[in-house]
Amino acid sequence: WGYDSDNGPEQWHKNYPTAKGRHQSPIEINNKEVHYDSSLLPWFASYDPGAAKTILNNGKTCRVVFDDSFDRS
Image (cartoon, rainbow, N blue to C red; front, side, top):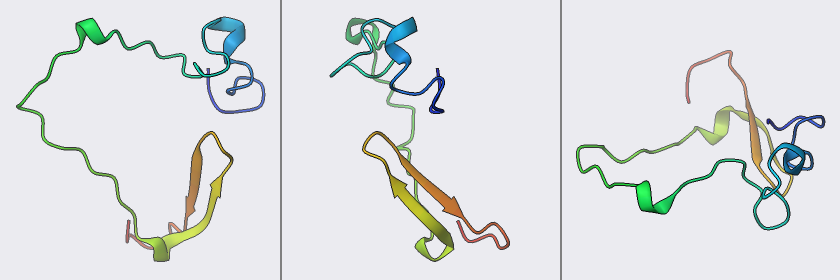
Protein backbone atom coordinates (compact mmCIF):
# COMPACT_ATOMS: atom_id res chain seq x y z
CA TRP A 1 0.00 0.00 0.00
CA GLY A 2 1.02 3.60 -0.43
CA TYR A 3 -0.34 6.96 -1.52
CA ASP A 4 0.13 6.86 -5.30
CA SER A 5 -2.82 6.41 -7.64
CA ASP A 6 -2.06 2.71 -8.19
CA ASN A 7 -1.73 1.83 -4.48
CA GLY A 8 -3.35 4.78 -2.66
CA PRO A 9 -6.37 4.95 -0.35
CA GLU A 10 -8.79 4.26 -3.21
CA GLN A 11 -7.00 0.92 -3.81
CA TRP A 12 -6.36 -0.24 -0.22
CA HIS A 13 -9.60 -2.20 0.05
CA LYS A 14 -8.44 -4.56 -2.73
CA ASN A 15 -5.75 -6.07 -0.48
CA TYR A 16 -7.30 -5.07 2.85
CA PRO A 17 -11.08 -5.54 2.59
CA THR A 18 -11.79 -3.72 5.84
CA ALA A 19 -9.92 -0.66 4.53
CA LYS A 20 -13.00 0.68 2.80
CA GLY A 21 -15.25 3.53 3.81
CA ARG A 22 -14.64 4.63 7.39
CA HIS A 23 -11.86 2.04 7.85
CA GLN A 24 -9.30 3.43 5.40
CA SER A 25 -6.06 2.50 7.15
CA PRO A 26 -4.53 -0.90 6.31
CA ILE A 27 -2.76 -0.87 9.67
CA GLU A 28 -4.59 -2.88 12.30
CA ILE A 29 -3.91 -1.81 15.87
CA ASN A 30 -5.21 -4.35 18.34
CA ASN A 31 -6.12 -2.27 21.39
CA LYS A 32 -5.90 -5.33 23.66
CA GLU A 33 -2.20 -5.71 22.81
CA VAL A 34 -1.22 -2.04 23.19
CA HIS A 35 0.75 -1.19 26.32
CA TYR A 36 1.75 2.19 27.68
CA ASP A 37 5.53 2.68 27.93
CA SER A 38 6.35 5.52 30.33
CA SER A 39 10.01 5.45 29.23
CA LEU A 40 9.09 6.84 25.80
CA LEU A 41 9.38 10.59 25.41
CA PRO A 42 6.63 12.59 23.69
CA TRP A 43 7.02 12.82 19.93
CA PHE A 44 6.78 16.24 18.31
CA ALA A 45 6.67 17.15 14.66
CA SER A 46 7.29 20.71 13.59
CA TYR A 47 8.51 22.68 10.63
CA ASP A 48 9.48 26.21 9.75
CA PRO A 49 6.57 27.57 7.68
CA GLY A 50 9.03 29.89 5.95
CA ALA A 51 10.70 26.84 4.40
CA ALA A 52 7.44 25.40 3.05
CA LYS A 53 7.08 25.94 -0.69
CA THR A 54 3.65 24.32 -0.98
CA ILE A 55 1.16 22.72 1.40
CA LEU A 56 -1.52 20.43 -0.06
CA ASN A 57 -4.41 18.88 1.84
CA ASN A 58 -6.25 16.43 -0.39
CA GLY A 59 -8.72 15.36 2.31
CA LYS A 60 -6.82 12.17 3.13
CA THR A 61 -3.32 13.36 3.91
CA CYS A 62 -1.26 16.51 4.04
CA ARG A 63 1.78 17.01 1.82
CA VAL A 64 4.33 19.73 2.51
CA VAL A 65 7.12 20.45 0.01
CA PHE A 66 10.09 22.23 1.57
CA ASP A 67 12.83 24.37 0.12
CA ASP A 68 15.83 22.21 0.99
CA SER A 69 18.44 24.74 -0.05
CA PHE A 70 18.85 25.70 3.62
CA ASP A 71 18.34 23.82 6.89
CA ARG A 72 15.56 25.49 8.85
CA SER A 73 13.15 22.60 9.46
